[in-house]
Image (cartoon, rainbow, N blue to C red; front, side, top):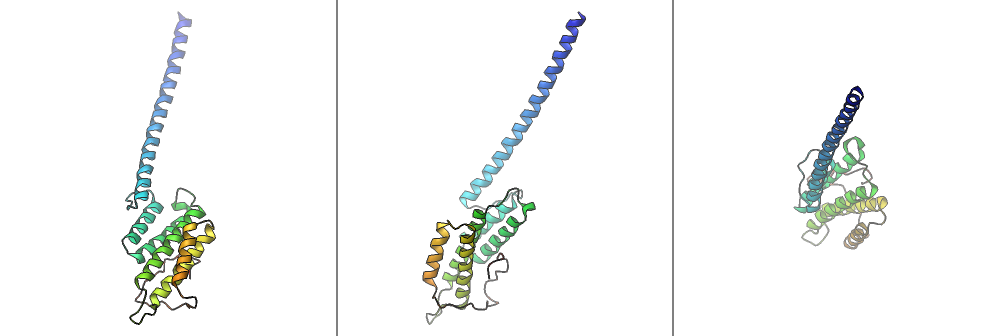
Length: 193
């Protein structure tokens, strides 16, 4: 009877250990499902171009907000937002992932798009000349597209938009001082004039 009792205790301990492992496994699985669902919602919002309110993903939140600003025609804030996204991307402690050169290229591409669109809004003066602020926006957009292509030379969208921009601006355009009443783009990432 003593041998049988020892075997029974051993079996109970093994069952308790397996039960504990099962509970830990279920808790881990539940957490992973929660995280996957949360990430899925953020990805859906990004694909739809919606604003993200979840503070857990500051990079994604700022990117989505900047994209939304540009979508609604608020180009100044869009450029600033994308510039801040690059700042976050360069601070590895603030992102839970490594921001790839292709993603940084995409951010520069979006900066270029918003500057290009801003320049198109201010295209010409009453006498048909390109406004100074439009020239400034175009030159900044050109630099942004060029930076995008440095980071990802295969970006067809950046190549296309750069060629489109070069078709719009005169070849003899010179750098102009920024009008203080115009768009402030102090948050442009380094590498852009």
